[in-house]
Image 1 (cartoon, rainbow, N blue to C red):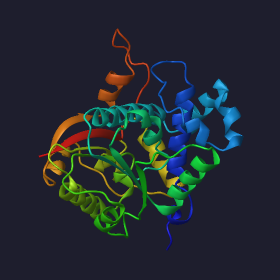
Image 2 (spheres, rainbow, N blue to C red; image 1 turned 120 degrees about the vertical axis):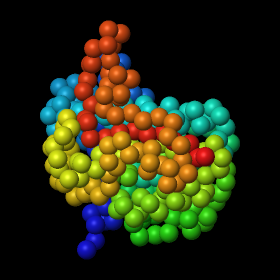
Image 3 (tube, rainbow, N blue to C red; image 1 turned 45 degrees about the horizontal axis):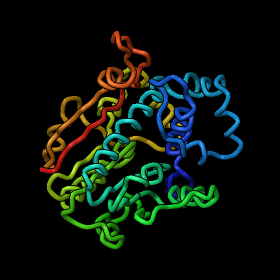
Length: 294
């Protein structure tokens, strides 16, 4: 049976783009992020909606599952920082898995230097993104390479070799909003590939959901809503990590955990004021991880 994502642009990628576009319009500094290209990528019919605070509030507080808007904002800022740090340290390569409507290669083009950026995604979503770039007259940097791939069906190493992604170079690997949608065997194969291609000092940034969420245990803030939203989008979650097991998971791929943030950590980092009061609650089902190749 053909999966929805094989024939139609990823709905979750579209919703993430919409969330980033809403965040770009925010005046509250806790909620404002810097993806100024996301609003440009939205269909023309949605652009007036972005400028109406009431309409944005309806989407972010009523339509979106509890805390997921805050999570996407925090995740965007977290990955932005990792991307900028890699550029500042003159990493050779950045590989973005399941890139969706990620715009970092355009937003940070002025500081990319000689760093090559590779974006991996399923063909239909990637083609839609490139089409939007062309339609909006957005210039694609020369050091950005697109690689169309089905993570569950195609051999990733062959795709990387064909595209000119080099082994054993200092690289940043980004898996943002991806692991939970892959089958466990695909996650294993992906991290094995990262291990085999990563040079010394390479970093990996990714997020995951708790394995208990897949079992529908209903432990975390916003869990029921996000489960329903993912199911309605026809893009099921298949992979999770047990609470407290991220370090052990990484060790299997010769990686050292350097940072781990759950919802409470993200609230403290991105949504707490000077007195420590939480301004916005973050959906509790996800965690963010940064690791380094040993």
